[in-house]
Amino acid sequence: MATDYDTPRKQDEELHEESLEELKSRTSDAQSGQVDIDEEEAAANLELPGADLSGEELTVRVVPKQVDEFTCSRCYLVHHSSQLTKGSGASSICKDCI
Image (cartoon, rainbow, N blue to C red; front, side, top):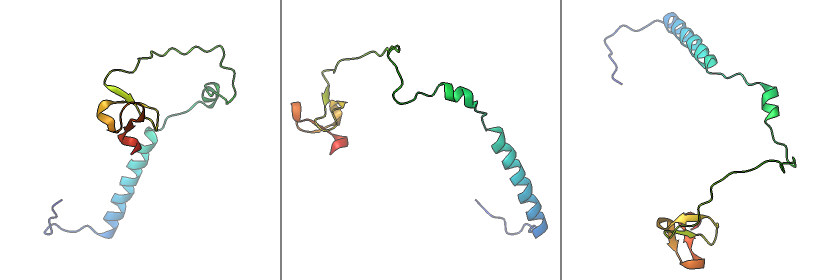
């Protein structure tokens, strides 16, 4: 940012007033972005460990491993063949595990 050294400088009082105005505008902007959280609603959606989920049904589409993919022998994740670093078959290792 270029500075014009020929312009008159502001006095300390003007700088102080300006900074207070900036702070006030910043606090009003920061407060406007806050979201009110309903604690009862948040507690109703909370799943506790050991909760009975036997009545729940999970629907996920499972796609089998494709021809251009491999399973890493260290992390056991399926990766695209472009992630293959070394090995082949059962000893394949991905770039993340090297």
